[in-house]
Image (cartoon, rainbow, N blue to C red; front, side, top):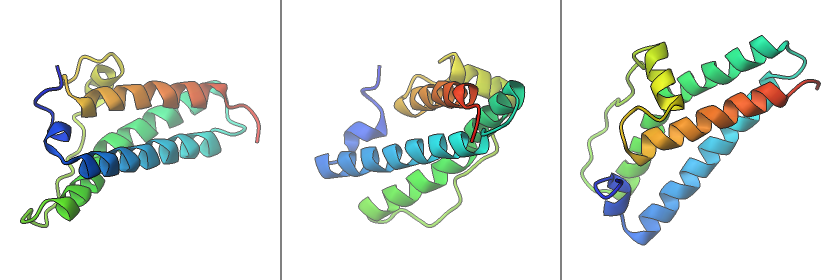
Length: 124
């Protein structure tokens, strides 16, 4: 399923670096959800989780592209972010119906983790 994913074209050190970057972004986004959800009603906490998933889906490709520029010679400096197409794209991520690649599936896992963290958070 993931054989053609760009992750597998990287060297072992490149893969480790990408995993570290992904873990930092994942944990940082979860932490933001935890902090922003304190003392909010459940519906607002869940909206915060969805907004963070939206922001992550929108902005994280630039962080990953910058990492690829560090490890792959000759990649041009460019903006690679694009606005997610809307709620349907987020729903596809959460139901694992988006592209069958590591990026989309990881975003789906992040989305569920954000909803769980936001939903469980109650007081400061």
